[in-house]
Image (cartoon, rainbow, N blue to C red; front, side, top):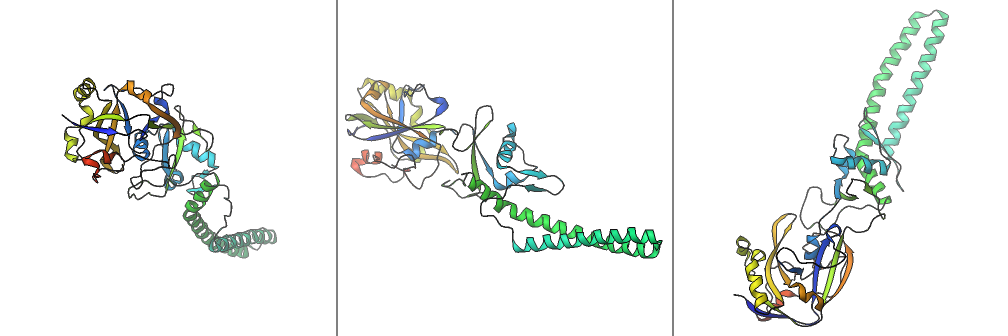
Length: 336
């Protein structure tokens, strides 16, 4: 049996969903007969699935051996104008705005051009000496050419290596020019943090160009028009994951029979870098959704436990934790 708590009139609740799960913009109950809300957008947007959203690192984009299902990476490379030389393991790509080759690379290119020019000169000398019948001199020029060609191969290999090393910086500038920036605010440490780029694809794996498509989810911002009376079973005890309240359908039915508008429970969001994230959820019975003032905005999946607000919603938030323990905040919960 839970306790009685009051969610005051004017309180804010949040619900995140994927665009593919929308039903005419209406909030529909799940199999448990409840319509669920989180206390802040950061938690709500964790529930937005990343339909068609794929992340590639700069290394993956530049590695011709790396391929993926649906050949989505090929589309990304074509969009960026990348053309691969399979023999040199180097990508040709457009010069990004502000790009300039290093002085050392420019120096090596000039050295290569000079040596190749000398080879052509010696080849002309060989043809001339052949006409003159001077076989010994022609053989000497062949020796010069052979020595030069070895040096040319070394310089070419060095140039290829230098271009390969610079290609990641060049790619990042090219992505920036296309309005594509590294994923930020992942909320956990990763060897690829700051080097992961998000691309959106349709269900048939077609690349959605930046600015071409809208966000792949929705954030519902609900404001209560009246006091909501809730039955609370929330304790803030992480051991409750063993017997989660969100699966207690009988308790929900009992709360409805007892005249409550909904329930307040401990809930767990599956999240990156965490097995589960403890937070508070409000479940309302469908007939009480009419007593909410609802606004719907485009949103995407986000994972950032450092803030309860998101770029989509920086407005007012109701701290659900204050509904517990006589108004004292339960610090074990993530967010509010």
